[in-house]
Amino acid sequence: MIESWPKADAKFFATPSWLKLMYQSMAEAFRQEKNGVEAVFQEHQLFIKPWDEPMSLIPSDKVHVWHGTEDTTCRVDNAYRIGEAVPNARLEVFKDKGHCVMFDNLQKLCKNLSSK
Image (cartoon, rainbow, N blue to C red):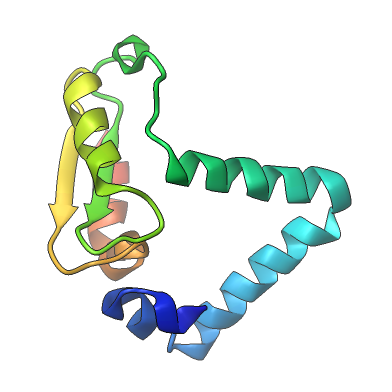
């Protein structure tokens, strides 16, 4: 599975502790039987289709969208669509990064989350 990922994500999961965490997360979801499996399925359905929800109803200035240009799990065009549809959304697209872009930017993430 990892071999099919973009370079940035494959490099990220080459770190044994992160790979172990991913496997533990998935195992926990499936351990919860039907509800966990359904949640994983629903989450992946969101990854593969455009969102048709009325994003303009989200309160202004509440959304930060980070997306890697090389993400093959979630469509980058959805990030642009959300950035345009949500009032005052903060969109940041990271060149040459994949699905795990936030883990490469933990300090910046903490700063953004604590600034409000």
